[in-house]
Image 1 (cartoon, rainbow, N blue to C red):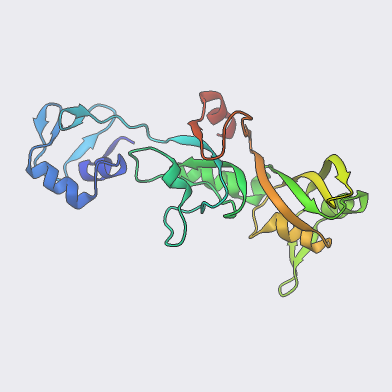
Image 2 (image 1 turned 90 degrees about the vertical axis):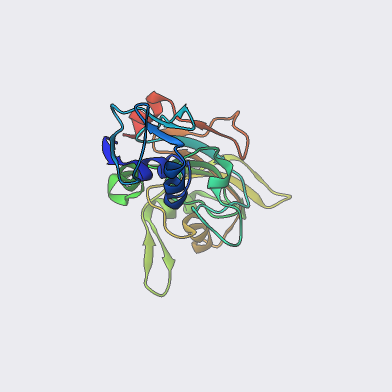
Length: 241
């Protein structure tokens, strides 16, 4: 993080808006190495300086990484006027967190929350071939022909001949004849709008339930309930990097 303005540092740490921090400085709530800060544009070195707000030291890593088990009903965005966002599930002072990629509102599962823009770009770029695996319940019988079609790549948009890259489709449980349901995993390396749903629609089937279970080197923990999250371990961060 190194050298930057104190108002930006404290805003990113979730202490308040820059306007609020300006007021806090005037009131003497903020100190730098034990001395009251006087200007919001004062430069600080986050590797050396000790910054306190109301006598509490503010310590913040350059980057933070959270693994969230996204529940249905939440939007993968930083702000939304129609539904709660995934960030509302994360308790953090930081104001610069965002979801790395997106899951549809009704889709559950593994979502990375971070403020590392470079890593997010790397993970989401199709040219880096990062696997994303989904568990899905499908209306209709998935068979070997579907597996072959997914492997070859599918046309998923008629207007511009949009094509999904080849994907790995595997059947993970016996077909339920009575309910007309199939249980599958599908692994893709891109993230087009409603991609998994559109791929199954292209082979005449419908997704009734969708949950992301892996993303890059991350796997959704079985004991992490929908709506819960945890920080990534150092090993998980290194795998992503």
